[in-house]
Length: 67
Image (cartoon, rainbow, N blue to C red; front, side):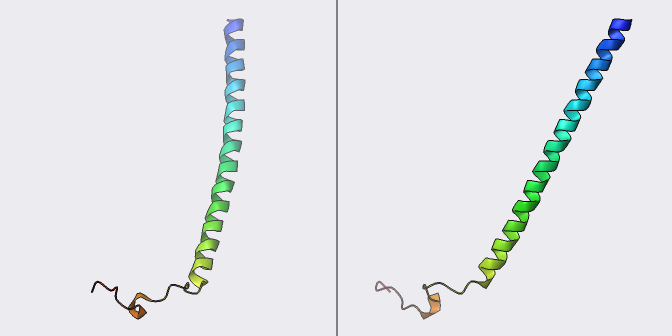
């Protein structure tokens, strides 16, 4: 009986350590995701403020020669 109890205690300690490791990894991943989302938002805002490129408006372009 003593050996079984000792084995269960060891298994419990291993499980507890594994949960702590997984929890820490989850925390790090959540930080990375939050950082990536902020970067995406920043890039979207920057993209909205950019002026149109050298390619003008299609309405200003003459039709191709085959029309």
